[in-house]
Image (cartoon, rainbow, N blue to C red):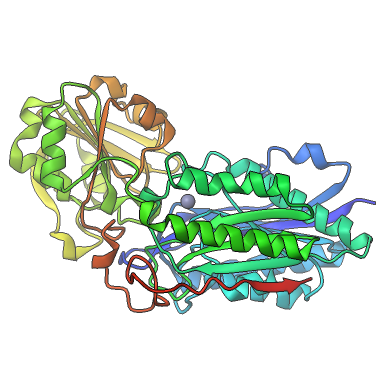
Length: 488
Ligand SMILES: [Zn+2]
């Protein structure tokens, strides 16, 4: 007999510090076979599992999700789920979430989602969730789920494997139940909150911390899975903090794993530093201008849409134009979201000189748009970026997109007609740590500590709702690393 595994969820990371609100336009919703394409390993399990796709919504990181969108999505999700429940006996639920959704009127969006799910399916069927390690674990999410797992790498090169592990966890739980075995669940809420730019798993101490996981699974009998969440720092919510969870059939070993990971994490906390060179804007730009190596990458970290930034601040652009850097160096700046400007340029011809009032429209507190004249050199459309244009001023090329978008690969860059990274002295990307493509190309790199909705200077963001004490906001306190233990 095959297990009937229902699959679905909602996946977004959203900052509470941007005025931007994520809604229908930002989400890519899938159902049916289209949804199942997220799981390229699915055929391997066809003998054992009958996959029943419910619904999945995914968006680029953004702002707080609009209640109107969420309520409609939840209603549609429940309707599809109702139909599936009439047709199939539910054996287990594969919940596919990020874990850092902020939602109007909620401080625990994924907790709310799993509550709604449990109301519909009841308390018995296992619900196993795959998450991003930048998600947050609330007590509700831990209580109502059976097993939670998350990525073990940042940058996230193991997203596909993590989702597969979520399925194998679910199958192990289901097989175990047939033999009357119960799963021990252990969770430690770790009072640490750091940005991803300090906690990459490619450098220490993140590397050693995450290396503990395969070691534990190898050496501790009866442990199914252990995971470490770094948490999401740009959401002003009580749940925003790190966590570790362990699951297994051997309760003592499971609890020991959670405790060991949490204690290691706490011991390492002072060693987390930025994973690359950082500098204030002026200093970082100067370093790039003086560099003899090219391309030199600059990350505009405060406006990184990949973490929920506005994606339209023009602080770096203003600095370039003020310094006249574009007259001497070949610079590419990708990208600024400004649908209004893209629309206004629709009537223009390629090569026209156009006056633009560019960017700075989402977060008015950051200085407003740039008023300047540029040359329109390309116009293109992309399914995610939407209608887009490339503008030029002297040796500066700048991409303006209709939608929030991140240039995380060289292919994105080429699609815009910008050619190769190697053609530029300086490439400025709205990003934090460099994704693999960029990192391979970079001959020099600085993360600019720019202001914005995902400012790296966490201590200067207006937090009111974090659960304190919390490192690095508080220091010198004795942490509570008690293990919350449950059995299901
Ligand atoms: Zn992440």
